[in-house]
Image (cartoon, rainbow, N blue to C red; front, side, top):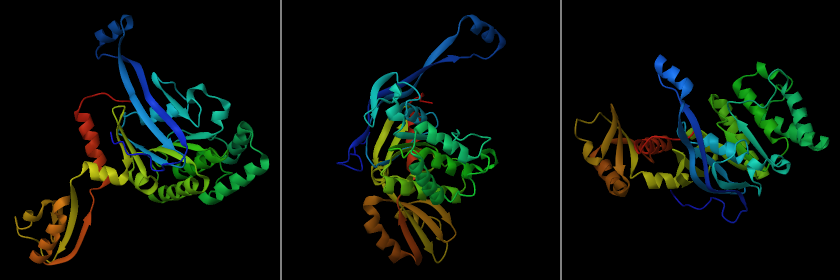
Length: 344
């Protein structure tokens, strides 16, 4: 694990997690008629470790991304921090509250948005759900109207709030879910895959909105996602969870430096290189006509680039880090190769 300090040192601690673990006992159902009959009298169980002793500190105003393969324990982690479930071991506090004690004072200070579940009433217009939120959270009517109108304007959903939720597209519904989650002006926002299934335009709109919320309202945000574009657009700090444990906790730049030893050099040449001619500069990942992509050791970049320019007729050249998607995928594969298991 990378022990890089939080991205906003000096800010008050909002989330403190120490040794948090969650275990489930699940039934194993064997295949075949005989095994099914036997299972009626003797059920075999096994333990699934969704989280294994996680430690994490999040400061006020941070925007933290949780990345992990399916079953890594990301959603379980958010459910624990929001008090939906209780842990098997360890402690956690959010805004000074133990989440699973479910104190009313705590519920008024955070919000949870799950991309695959609705908090809006399906058959009613979102405006009716908004009014219900006002009653639940006991929001002053003047303050409620001001906050609602500001959020609706920022997401440009004024024409949607009086339509039944069932008639809305996934992207439209997610925008209104975010409005509902922020009506009581929470200090902490948990987002579980909020852009899943959305088109590029909807993703961009939500990214812009969340950046504004974080900057202007100083909301602390913890985001789970499978989309690297979410991470690159929103987050300064990345936490990678695999098999219920934190594998990396640090900056986006830090994960590139730690887990890659090369850069990607893309060349546009005047002509397609002859076989074997370009390999001396670096391992070629791809050759498409006159366009060549090389992987060059970081320490050799300064020496290799002048050599390429002297030896080849280069029309254009670019040097980039290994894509974040590739780095994270390699981490997932490496963790999976280390054994089986994981979270929910």
